[in-house]
Amino acid sequence: MAWFGLLAVVISYLIGSISTSTLLVRWISGRDIRSVGSGNAGATNTMRTLGLKWGVLVLVFDGLKGAIALWIADALVPHGTWALALSAVAVVVGHNWPVFFGFRGGKGIATTIGVLLWLAPLPAVIAGLVCLAVIAVTRYVSLGSLVFVCLVPILIVAFRFEGWIFAASVALALLAVYRHRSNIDRLLHGTERRIFDRTSEGVR
Image 1 (cartoon, rainbow, N blue to C red):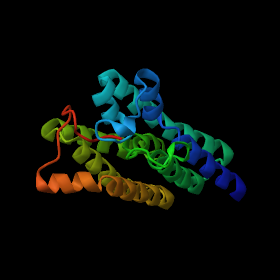
Image 2 (image 1 turned 180 degrees about the vertical axis):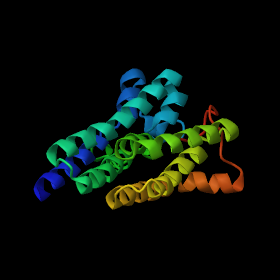
Image 3 (image 1 turned 180 degrees about the horizontal axis):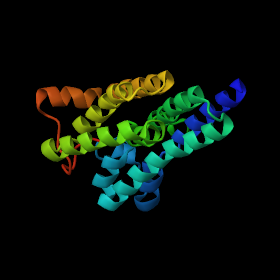
Image 4 (image 1 turned 90 degrees about the vertical axis):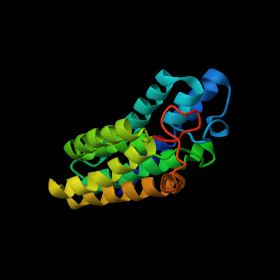
């Protein structure tokens, strides 16, 4: 069983390493998403580079990466919450540092949404609604994303999910905060750009 769990983690990392935005932008425009806009491989930069519909497509597919990874993990280790938790972290790590693209990826929010909807659907939905409200009011996607990842662990505790699920949510929150450290600095200094600004950053 432990070997199947390890296999699930490796597969999840490899799935995460399939950089949707890098492939899509390269296919449509011939450009490297990591050399235009914010330089990040994610939905917001794709939206800025190719348009809204393509950004939404990247958002959906990056979220699906997380769900597919956990579906495989659940098939390999039925009822193995530990395998799901580790695979959830692995697929986001793969998105952030993809082995197929020189370890230069995105910030992992869309993939994090995908895995949290699988692991803890109600907390993820509640946190997602709060996230959308924050973005609607402030127009800062990065702030909404950070609120989402930090609120989910609190809600998981409130709803008394298993310890492995809580641990995964904390690890995902820490990854998101680390990847958004430049956004946090700009938010604190009032220089973060808002959604639809051509150089803004956000969901990656």
